[in-house]
Length: 185
Image (cartoon, rainbow, N blue to C red; front, top):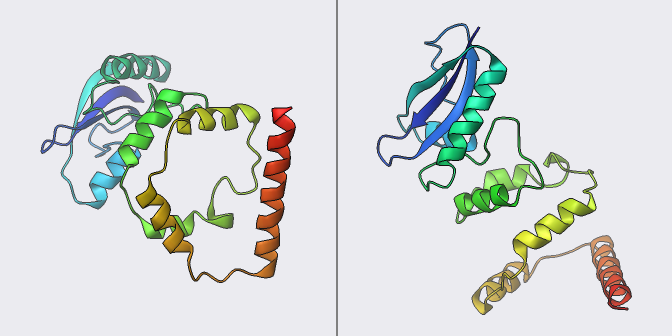
């Protein structure tokens, strides 16, 4: 098995992704599997992938990947969300901020439909308090302007809600107010 760190670049705008790959065939055509890579492939963007460093083991390749990404992490052309390929850490504020900035303005109604209810991979999973605190920190200080409030109001106008839904919303608001009053004491 050959283990290496690679760089996939969009030659048109200079944006790039650094990753680690293990293979038996150096010509397997692998360019990466991240969100940015997938978006480029969907839009038929031609990407160029080059090997940066060949490593003796997978463990060494992961370490090299992390080292190289750290050197490039704050570069605006770098499309990596994390220092390495071990998945997102829910406590990493910088990562959420970078993901948020990358996805701003993106609209994908099909994805939104798939991600509601049981289609959402987080459906039914209870989040721990540290995650809630992190998300609170991420969104603190954000203000909603009047134009945004108006758009939200207009989007809700005319929607017909079941009595069960109305009851659930009412109970949720009552619970929120009760907890808010309890926490102020």
